Image (cartoon, rainbow, N blue to C red; front, side, top):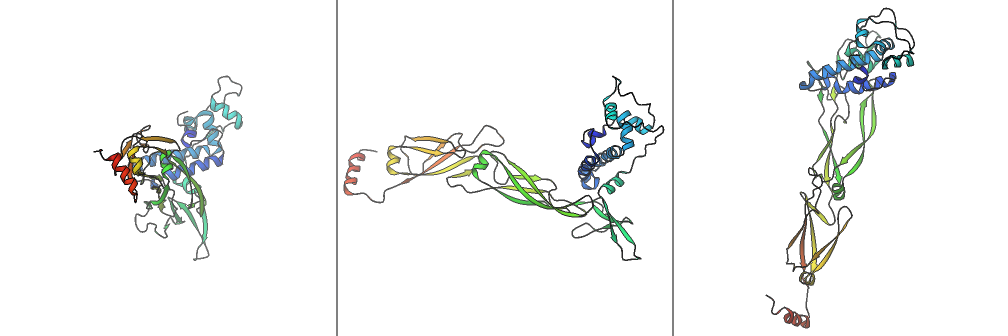
Length: 353
């Protein structure tokens, strides 16, 4: 068949006119040359032409019928034989599609006239009439190349849109950053966050409306404060400007017990002088809800630090590995001792060096 127009538009062979229009609009907004930087312009131009040609063929009943029956070469050359019988065992997939959806015989003579890609773009993205002040005439305003253009081809600009000579090249609005607070538990385990956004978009008729959308942000285990998640071109639209990228920046909420230090977790633990001298078993709850028991068998000196391997934060770039848990001890001394207590301590600790 040569070129697969269905694959170019990412639609199935039963795609309706509405399906074709929706997918064309989505792809055209991505690959229009004016919406891509200069470095990608050649690729964008090629893609944009392919998308436009595919839509031109599949949205035209006659062109689509011939293409489904005989393929791209016959469509463009106008040379095609009579269709094979529906009952033929050698019928191809496209013949089966034709006999299911269109039993009309193609015309005896046909000439393929491809439409201009920019004309298709202008038609799909709509036009509207606006009254002109002069002569009582109406001036047609067409949304084309990201701009509203009058019937004489001049572009209209507003707000921060480009102006003057050479304004056809679109600029991209500055990225918009939003803070994304996450608890230490969420950064430890990972979580999907739903964020509701509201933005201004241009519909098929060229009119602007407010669109609400739910974005899903996948927080990976071990992500750190400052990590950025970008949603390309999810900012507001305005004529002559490519929508801004929407960026969410991870922030870390304070935790009641743990403090993060890179991939490690730090816990400040207070114990009594008796516990520091005679021992204790710590019962800790981890960020993922586990209980771990840590025995203190050695004498704990003020300011001492104990390292528990592999109980810190997950290391995002090394799945399965974690940092360490660092326990910093603060020994609480008694505020006063009785004479008998002092005497007992002298007796017990007198010979201890």
